[in-house]
Image (cartoon, rainbow over all chains, first blue to last red):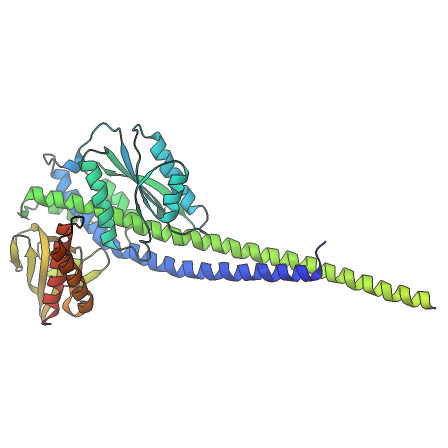
Length: 307
Length: 131
């Protein structure tokens, strides 16, 4: 049976932990807000870029680009994006699990895992897979040049023929309560997105006050464009650029998801601590009462013996 | 004529009283007046100048795309900063760092990247004004 003193120490211990989890929750909430702003800030840009790409590539049946090359898939590369820190529930594990599954199901012998976040790197290695290239400490905030570096590496793997397909695994952010691990193909690029697909995509993506304008896009298609320097080069740049933006967006989504997951995990921890404190306090009071009763009985018994 | 200059991080400029725009197209500077033919061009490192009714706005960009529609220009820039927003100290440090790398010509440093970094920093400094 624990003594009164021990109980008191335990309660103050739990209270300390609760203070920390509460502080972490606040920090995560603040960072989440900033991350969400980052995603929102990218939207006007990416939606415009999608427009441009769709318009170009849809009519461009004759365009050959290395990024469209469909080859029989033997080796794949996986860009796996999780975080540098723990204490965020199952956030890191989910990404690692999805990555490992993808790698193990791929027909090739070699793994080409590019991992972002030290937890992700460690997780993939623990599962017995090699990490070919790793990026740490790139969040808060994510910088666009980092996305370009990552993309350049993946592009090289694909263009040199080391891999025939590039996938990205990251956590898509819907709300602080809801994040979902998704796997998307980066390369080869889907030959052309149709307006319908883009429209669907944008209905989820577009913030208030912005609309997808199919009429505008269709009208623009009828327009004659002048290309500078020329059509092929513009296409090739657009496709390459779009790829970096996709990676950049995945990094931003992952960052927001991490903070969302941490916020929820810390909220639960704070609630659990509260429950524990209540229970321990109850136990402690019971203990105190028992000892008082015992002492009282002693006194009464002693007085009785004296008479 | 309308213009929107957008980067992955923010919308840098939005205006609807544009009289003339100069863009740093890769083949050389490109001037656009209202009624220009619809066009898509890729941009290099350089200066964007937007002449508004109440004076010109100058920006430094490190490349991107520009889409010229009827009476509307959309610039998708990798980066774009107004001359007053340029961090001169940072640009100067970046230029020194790049210059150092270029001078050393060390094997394992990507020369093309150092050159690009140098060009970007030099461009920012040029647009920010006389040193």
